[in-house]
Structures are given as structure tokens and as C-alpha cells.
Image 1: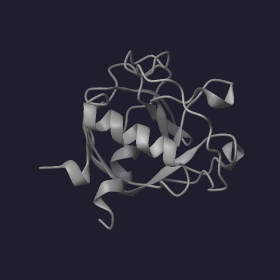
Image 2: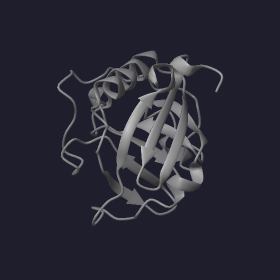
Image 3: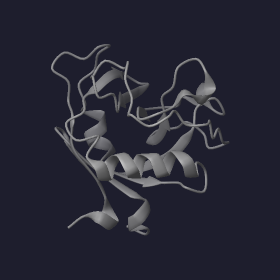
Length: 155
């Protein structure tokens, strides 16, 4: 773990997932995720949209894909980082500046999303656990983030 302040630990119903966050790519998005994780926003949140071979999406407080945090939406920080296996990127509506709290982890090559969604990190440990998350749109009895922690804040 090279940078504890920029390491997100997701304890999920399938096991631990460690994500290296990239403030060099998306400083505003990384700051928001750290803020929400420290406030406990992600604790108990479902992986509500999981598409085989594509991605697992989470971060909606309603578990439906329709909600976000009480904070304002973020300005897009699109970057050249490719959407490949393990990459973490922000979900949004069809408007670019609507990312808020929802994000997804890519299972495979999704480079058609490049420069249209904000990449903010990459899974460094536990991708096998992400692979085991229940599939569906919506997911019946979905897997969840049980606890999200910033490594620097972990006791």
C-alpha cells in the first residue's frame, strides 16, 4: 500500500477489494469518494447494476441507480486512462457533469467509455472478489459494500 491517503478499502459481502485512487487523474472525484467513505455513506450500499463481462456499479443510497449524496454533482474530469479490467470510474447520467456518488468497477475491456467517464482509480487487490459479485439489472438480493474505509483512516 504505497499511499494510504489514496487507498480505498471496500469490505464487501464477497470479500475485500483494495482500490488505488488517482488524484492525479481526477482530484475532485477522489476527494468526493474520500469524503463519502469517511462519512460512512458507502457502508451497506448495494452493487445494484452488475453486467457480466462489463462492470459492477454501486454507490446509490437507494440501491436503484437513481440517487446520490447530498453534495452537488461533480464537474467531469474525463481523462485518457483506459477503461480496462479493474478500473474504477464514475457513473453519471447522459449529461457529463452529473457524477455524484455512484461508481463502477470494470470487469473487462470497456474502452468505448474512454474520455466520456471519469476514471479515478484501479483495483490493486481483490478483483477476484469483484468477479464474484451477483449479476443483474437490477440485482436480486444484491451483494453490498459492508464498509468503505480510507486506509489512512483505518484503525
